[in-house]
Length: 233
Image (cartoon, rainbow, N blue to C red):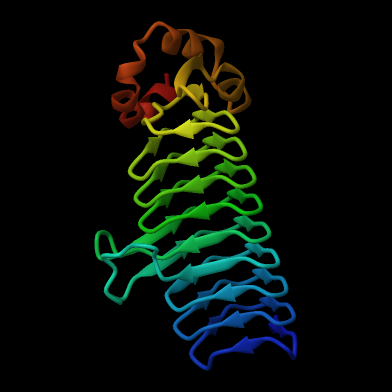
């Protein structure tokens, strides 16, 4: 299927487009960008050099992707932004590419990233993640698969948010959030117990949830490594 490019869009000669890509009005795509088949890019989007975007993504108006990291140590080195398949990026999201620390910022597949989210350099966001409006990530943050982060939350650099965790809105996340738990709070960020409802929605049985309830929260990052074995029990 042939790609559709609006006549006002500016596409550099070296851009690689998969089949059926749609590019809207006044979008600018710089050189050294790859976009997978079936991805739709709306109007007034900027995609800078170093972006690698998967198939069937939806990128909404005003998004700015793969621009230089906001890091004083950045010296112009070649780095990348990787986005997986079927990820939705809503209006005015900004995703910076990596620095020499890791060389890349990574956003996985099947994610919903709502309006005005910012992810700084060298972040790694997993798959099936929901990030609500105006969440702000510092550099080097990690978000595990199936995590949910409420709107207007600030996530400090180097913070890890584990798989199946939920962070409440308007939170100040300055501590790691273990897998499977809920956390929140602005003046005092704290853990609020197991993310029971979220785990049930993701197919965890009552027996597995009861097993997790009996475990100390501090073990959850270690348990995350063994999660595939736990799910087979």
